[in-house]
Length: 291
Image 1 (cartoon, rainbow, N blue to C red):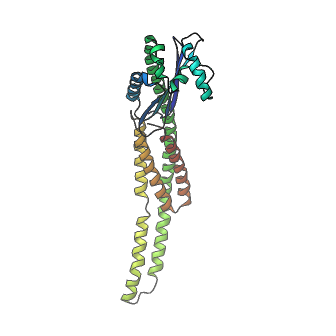
Image 2: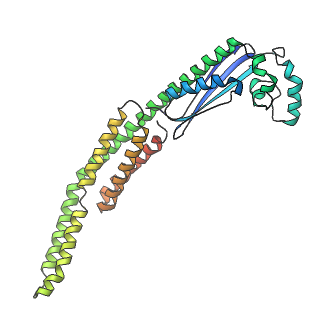
Image 3: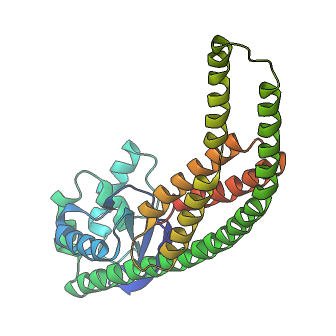
């Protein structure tokens, strides 16, 4: 189980100064990849995207690269007058010249920035650090996934305990409903039925009462709820992506809990079901953040 969100960063020394790469992962229905690498480093971007896709099935992966220059004599001097002119047009540009600022300017590639400044050894470092930061992000998502799984186990344990409490209350509820139904039937039977017309008149109330008693039996809903909770625990022990299955199963759990709550007509059972729904909703909130 993996969390869909996470953050990781790696820093290395390169010719121009220091290279810092950060990786973020955000919720997304499918896999998506974004980076701020320039067009001239499209091959490196493609390699990083392919590696990320091999590790992540879902989520938006954002890689951001930043090379901070070490000194004024590092090769940026040829761009300084051009950069200062750009600063007048775009005051938001930082005072210190860095690679990211140059990459984001429209004319960066036309100045041959990458071909002039990128050392082949630095490209190797770029590739290596890209893979390392993606791996670090993967490990972070796995660690967060373990924490979420632990929360699921806790909520599941409480939900099973509440369900056991509901099952323990059922015999008293059924006995009370049975006694009430018998009393109602006896009251109807006590009425004088002196003709066939009167008999037909009371057939519908008897039939309605019988069907109503069967309709409000909770055995099927309790059995399905218990089955879904057992399946949920099985999914927690399963390796690989389970987020969508867990989300669907939690919807079914909530549906059964709502049905029981509507049919129970018993305050003690209703209180237990409210607690059970709280545990299910807590798990649903976490399920939105797992793969």
